[in-house]
Length: 337
Ligand code: PHE
Image (cartoon, rainbow, N blue to C red):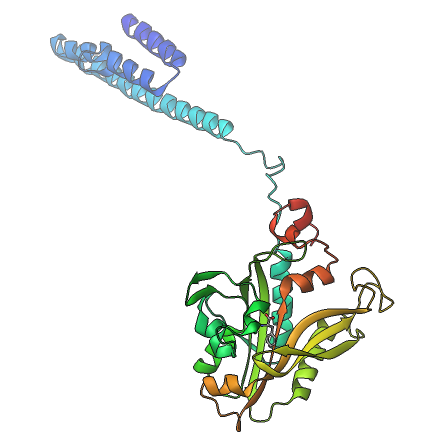
């Protein structure tokens, strides 16, 4: 029995030193394993006289239970410690400022486009889209611009082949819309267009927005009212608007629309080239020839169309003096909008 108490002492001592779960197992094997110290003692019981055997058996079994309990307790303690260590090492300091991702924003051209679409949507126009790689037929022919017609010179065209072009304006969407829809209807067609042109106010790719309204009693006064309403909403309610006679093969009569210079209020400055007026868009009544080519009876239907450059309008609205700024992706420029 003296023996037993020193076994217990060394067991508890070793247990207190063990630092990991793996070490616990070594101790279990050493004391309670098949060839363990305590197991060895239990095996000797059989050699004892019966009366001693009983009491020794009780003591040894109590010892066994004690060891098992101690092992379990220690195991739990070690597990807890490991968990605490893990939690401590993975701890999040929620007071550290996060990585700041600055919010993105819309490109000024996108914003301008959306603003324009909003205004026309409020007047009942729906958005129509068409291809940027367009056939000669839709881009020119069906808009009353035949081959060899001098009007082709108005737009320096990128030809993909003899019959395919990069659309030079959004007007081909007028034709596609007329083929798809039944009057009365009103659409706007925003999108990219391409012309072989590059300087401080021209880029080979730019954006336009087209408008088309067709019905049985559409007159020039509808055109005037819609465009005036738009320009007053977009620029300012008191900006003067004027219509100047002009020429487009697909509209007759045609007009160029100006607003009073928003920089000098009409007094004359560099932007308006001292005229007091700034040209904003082209417009007109749909040419009966265009209706005929798309199978619309010009005796029954009339309509108006207009088209404007988004870059130009954005440049005026935000006082931007070089069109190339839109495409350089200079964050200092884009951040201002
Ligand atoms: N498509 C013409 C251009 O790009 C603009 C326009 C559209 C004029 C519709 C009249 C009617 O210059």
